[in-house]
Image 1 (spheres, rainbow, N blue to C red):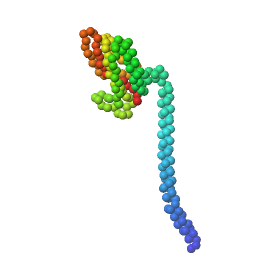
Image 2 (image 1 turned 180 degrees about the horizontal axis):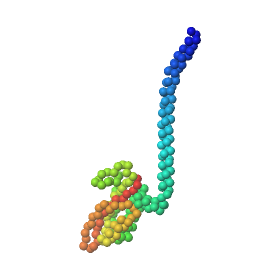
Image 3 (image 1 turned 45 degrees about the vertical axis):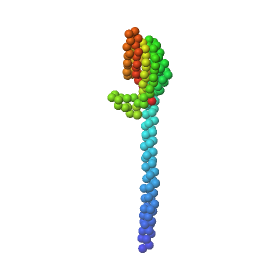
Image 4 (image 1 turned 180 degrees about the vertical axis):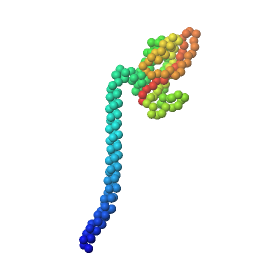
Length: 182
């Protein structure tokens, strides 16, 4: 009988240790630690993918010709720079033979799509409306608009109103939209 008591007692102690210590420890802190490790492994894999993609984009950015990048920055600047824009438009008007009498700048919050549908807030482009008043001949206006068309800045002439005159010198009201990166 003593021969069966010790193995039975050892079996009961082993079962007790398993059910009261090993099983709760395995399913509690060890399971949560395994889940944290799996989550960290996913985050590490995502970070490696991000770093790889960032390096590819940096290489692609460095491969762009500096002159092309400067032209792109001129076409779609990262800020509005109202003073430079007004000076450029005034110089263009002077070369064209127009005299600018006023320039009003009104910032827009988003660029609008067709049919006045608002662009999403994630749109990287902003816009600025300019209202210009100018005086000059029709030929001077044509030269000015051709200059705006050939401008390195991205500009849209949205509205144009002409007040007639018997002298051949007209008064023009224009709305021009300028785009920039946010």
